[in-house]
Length: 461
Image (cartoon, rainbow, N blue to C red; front, side):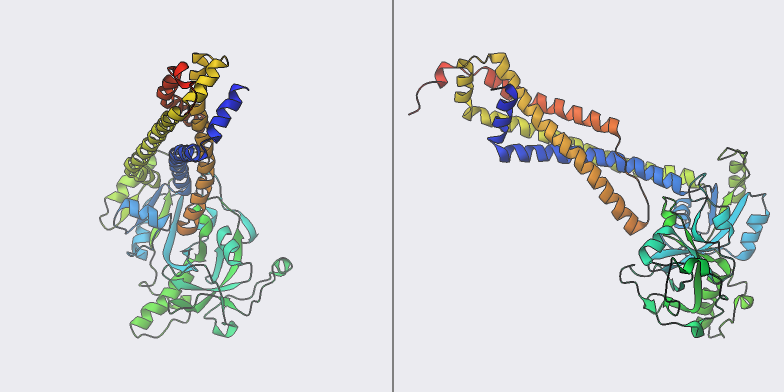
């Protein structure tokens, strides 16, 4: 019988102990690899998700909050900027890009970004990767919207569909329904557009308006979907992009109703108090092929002198964010290392306890010609195989767990990450696990090495 078969039969003779010990090692390996892959994937996703914006200006409480709210749509900003302040900022510097945004509405849980058409032409969801349309075009009128790829996929929206927006974050996207609004309900809805070229591929009932059921639905204004974006691989795929004037109008209805004033009849009735934004995405001029320039710091210092606004450099704030969570990463990595050491100790205890029951087996092997060094190597190999099995299972769990965590993160927060497992790290961790398990089997192997043959070949009583 070969050494491999001897080791395998020995492991199968104690299935519960072998499986539990290998599972403990697998959990430790999976935790170590998952933490590393998710951390790096998260950093890449956040760094990539700031797009080509050099600065963001808002009235939020801190620069980090400004970035999380304005670029990652974490929460609707509560403090707005007036149109006078926007004009002062935009006109005060020769910006290559200055895109105002207004957040605060949603569509079945997807954030709505009310902005100008420049958001889809000048702003890039990822550096060097501009928006591309899967169907339709950019919005042109105040009652037109463009939907991200994730919105279109999960809601079924397509060209020509009409929607009502919801104030605030809205509800879950589950159970999406269509309201019964018709053209008679439209408050300045856009004129009909020629979508004949798309109707063959997308047949919808345009007599209905898609909206949530609730008291916070802006049913005074109906928007039409005129474009669907291709996937960008970022969290920006989950947004609905609306015209800024249309966004102002839906809030003008609420503001004037609360004040007991007549409702506006259209965008021409908008007042200065209606023309508010929650942020401005800024980019300074750069040379071709360069993502940044020294003038960014000059612009940042100039804006920071204004105490009424908050200015943030997105890339710097993302670095600060991951600096904050670095200590937490260290705790999880230490926890994984501790579990791995516990697994190695479990290997040692399992093999040590089994030696008492296997003394006669070892004595028989010695009589059949198995030398002491060979017995030593059999036990060491047995412990290393347990470590190898645990490491292989841990790598598989890390891959599957990373994909599951990425899907949950995208569903709940909209942040898109790609937790690609670092093959080099996986090999290093697996090799270290096998070595550690082998070292854990050293004490039981020495015990087997010293087993006296004569004492354990006596007839059993």
